[in-house]
Each structure stands twice: as structure tokens, then as C-alpha cells.
Length: 216
Image (cartoon, rainbow, N blue to C red; front, side, top):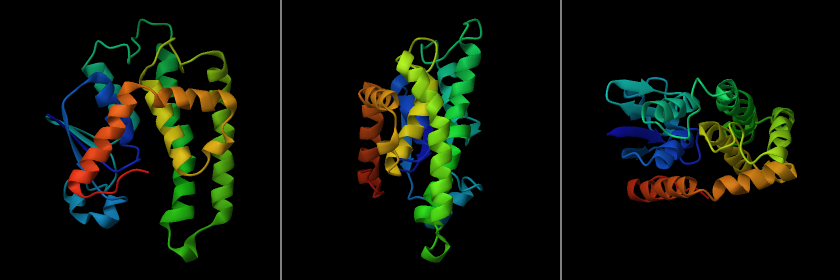
């Protein structure tokens, strides 16, 4: 049984979404965010104190995009993965990691300096600068989704999960109103997927059962 440690609307939503798209059984353990502050016992399981943590037998992973890649590769064959023999293999890897390294990174600074730091340490200039950074990097996704329904390979893949989570976080941070029309339509399509809806339901159900915060 795969075990996923998760916080509502955190990066761990990527592997949760992948698990639901694949139809794999798993146990979801909900934690308050950030767990290193509000669930210090978690440090005994993951000394980094970060989310996600996925356990699959002897395998332990903490990077959300890498976990999505692992799941669609190990538990395939599935159209969610792009094979090494497909022309879009390089693009698949690029966009899978772009979602985290390029899109999510600046948003973490927006979140930190708008909400997570004590009031006296919050910094509107950092929030504004990194919001612009994110939106600037998002322009390439606007260009791609204006021409095609998915990020690569002509189908929904784990790369869409990775980029899609960055859009979910942007919505959470109040940045979705600045999406271009193509990204707005792309994000709406992603939210209509059954796998996405099941992941949201799973998160909410586990949060209710385990006494963790329900997503908005």
C-alpha cells in the first residue's frame, strides 16, 4: 500500500492527483501546514519536515514532480507517461519539472511573505516581485495552451498534473485573475477531469476524518 503524507492544497496534491488518475490504492495521511511547525512529530518520519512524503515499500520520496514521474512510470503502461521512444519525451520531462522548479518556486515566496511569516516580517515588495516572476514565466504556458489542449504529446500527461498544481496554488494565492484566456480555459479543463475531482474529494474526506483543514 502506498502511503502519502499530504497537506491541503500543498505540493503533495501532485502525487495525490496522479494516484487518482492511475486508480491506485493508497493511504492518505493529512497534516496541518506547515507540518514542521504544527506537527513536529512528523519530523521523526521525515526529518526535512516537508510535504509530500510518499512511501512505497522501501521507496521514500519527497519531491512532488519526481513522485508523479515515478508513479506513472512504475505503474504503467499509462498514457500519463511519455515513453523514451516518443518524440515528446524531452518536452514531457521539461514541462513536468518546469511546473515545480519554474512555476511553483516563486509562489512559495509569495505565500511565505504574504501569509506564513509573522506580521512584522511580511514583505509586500517580495510578494509583488515574485508574483510578477510567476506570471512572467506563465506566459509560455499561455502560448502553448492557446494552440493545444495539453502541455505536450497531444494528450493529458503527468506534465499537466505538474503545471496544473501550479495553477491551483496560484488560485489559492489570488493570482488566477491575472491568467491569460488560454491558461484560464486550460485550468478550467483540468478541473473537470474525474481524476482531479476524485483527488479533491479524497483530500476533503481525509481532512474531515483526520481533523485537518478542509480546502476552500
